[in-house]
Length: 64
Image (cartoon, rainbow, N blue to C red; front, top):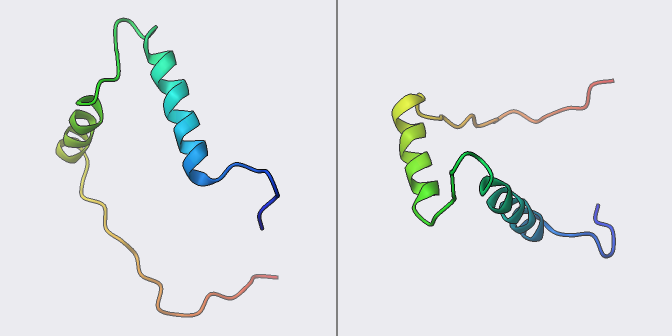
């Protein structure tokens, strides 16, 4: 369901990024540069186990 005039996923993500970018300026000298997301992704890969996808092959039924 979509409401007329409601923001889509893309505009919401842009807003979240803008807020985090602005807020990060006050985080003890931490700034978000174009390299930052890549460095965070590399760090996540080093520290966390790989994510595996779960594929549901059976139909999902509604619980009552």
